[in-house]
Length: 90
Image (tube, rainbow, N blue to C red):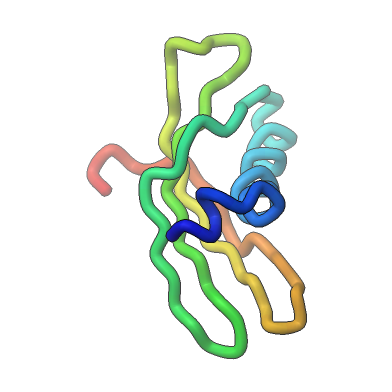
């Protein structure tokens, strides 16, 4: 989806927010690297199922794959419903 890949403010809302939450929960310093996939579903807004890579600034050689479910409403409201490390079997 080019919207999230090319629009910095969109990416900041929908990808950086789950990274920030994960960092605060795990006392980490993960930074966004790249989107792997973005799938969307539309219903009075857009659900975004995002898979992306982030690295910990303290260990740049260990990238981690995350998944997030984000909501972008037609009213402009943006919210992250969940984020997690991707399970190896997914």
